[in-house]
Image 1 (tube, chains in turn brown, orange):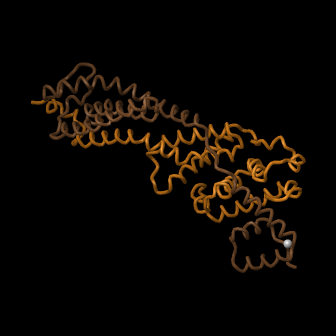
Image 2 (cartoon, each protein chain N blue to C red):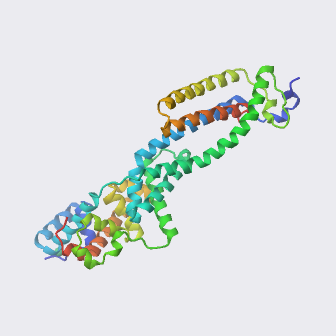
Image 3 (cartoon, each protein chain N blue to C red):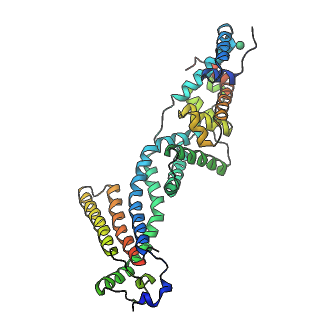
Length: 174
Length: 196
Ligand SMILES: [Zn+2]
């Protein structure tokens, strides 16, 4: 009888990871050799037991913790944004009413001096209408599901988008 | 004369609207990002958690790793190019996170099996699956990665090669060695029990 096979070879045999002639040869050997047959049975059992291990679910608090960590960075930014946005709002209102760039001391960013291309105001209005619509939808959803964290988040996001958009517009995209 | 014309140096862009537009689009993207992220989480959480659990052998650490993985996913969503499946990308982050975690801890992880001597294993009512689960955490790093991804998580060698940045041949070879090692470790157990 031919020499016995290593566990690695038997494992490859199990997965059909060998040349057809080799598979045939090992198959013949296993029929005659109880040692290799038993080894193959054990490797098969290990593979089958491993593949039947169930998929596990993380607990719910993991998701909340992930959100907390992710939002920690975002909230910091929103906080900064809202300060910038408030200043920018003043600039924007004056800017739109007077129809030309004005300089508001201290808080005015350089963009107040910019030229506004035709169509930009329209573009901005269209965009803001989209966000306003999102805010309204979020408010409706929030009144129906006041405790749903996903809805709460959407509402906050929509609100912060208003501020961000304002700032982007007044800063000319810098 | 407008102020802009008086101060042309302040005007750094020829097409401000283009820049504004891209920024506004950026905000819309940010708005959508969190929703995409939640979907990615729902879709991948059990893959990540199960993989982490099998690497470290306990729930608490697996929960921590799962958090680290998804925070990283969130931060890097922009850089994901989409030229591979997102699950492949997340698996790669998971495997790296597991080993970073283990290296940081610098201690050998033993699952609940640590308390079980081989003697007690023989008479233990644990299923072979549970025994394997514990033994896996003691496998050498390279074997462990492939065994978990192939035999437990059911990935293909092609996917594992992508995730671990190795060849498919290497993935196969590591798998066969991992199984051999496990059989060797499990021999006291399997000798004394019916398989399965
Ligand atoms: Zn033999």
